[in-house]
Length: 293
Figure 1 (spheres, rainbow, N blue to C red):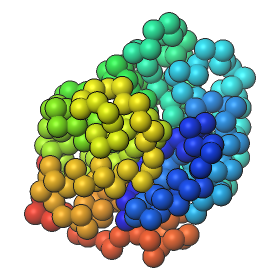
Figure 2: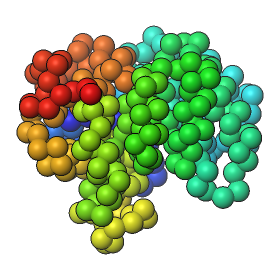
Figure 3: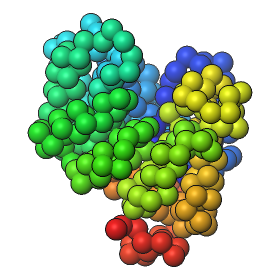
Figure 4: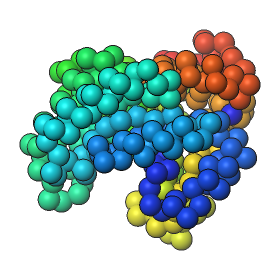
C-alpha cells in the first residue's frame, strides 16, 4: 500500500535485526522500499539487499558526505556499475547524490564536481536521481537545470515554497518524512499541505529522521531514536490528516508519484508484485483534491 522512497536498510543500525525490520515494514503495509547507495564500497551491499527482500529496489550513487577521498575512479566505477545494472529490474536510478552545506569541513568545490559528474551519468543513461539537498537546495537545483536532468526526488525536502517550485518545474518530486510529523515544523507541514499532491512522495531516511512518536524530543532536527521503513505508514497518516484525504486515495497518489519519479520502479512492481499495488485512480483528481495546480 505504501512506498518508502528513501531508506538505508543496509546501515549498521540494522545489522542485528535487518530481516525483522523488513518484515515489520511489510506488516505495516509498506509494499515498496527504495535503497540508495552512498559510496562505491556499498554498491554490492544495497544490490544484494534489494534482491534479498521482495519489496526492495536500489539506486547507486556517491553521497556528498562520502565525497572526501572519492575521485575519478569512483565515478568510473559508478558509470560501469550503473550501465551493467540496467539489465537488473530492481535498479531504479542514481543516488544518493547531491550537496551538503550543513556538515562542516567538506570541500564545496569537490562536492560540486562529484555531483555534476554523477548528474551527467544519470543523463547519459536516462536515469532519475535521488538527491541530497541539505542546506543546498538552490545549488542542487541549478546543476539539475544546467545538466538537464528532469526526473527524480529531492529527498528530505526542507526548503522554501520557491525552492520547492524550482524542483517541481524541473520535473522532480519532493520527499517528505519524519520531519513532517512534528507539530511545530510549520514550514514543512504547510508545504506538504499546499503543494500539488502530485509533487509529493513519502520516505523515512531510516535509520535517520525518526518521526515524532519515536523521539524523546518534542521537536528538533536531531532525533536519536532509530527510524525504520515501517514508519512511512505513520508519515502517510500525518499527511492524510493534514490534507484531509482518506488513506486509500493517498496511497494511490503516492505510488503513482513514486513511479513517475522512478519509472523503472513501476516496471518492476507491475511485473513482480502487481497484487500489492493499490488500485488505480483517475489522474485528474485524488479524493476531492486536484493533483496539480
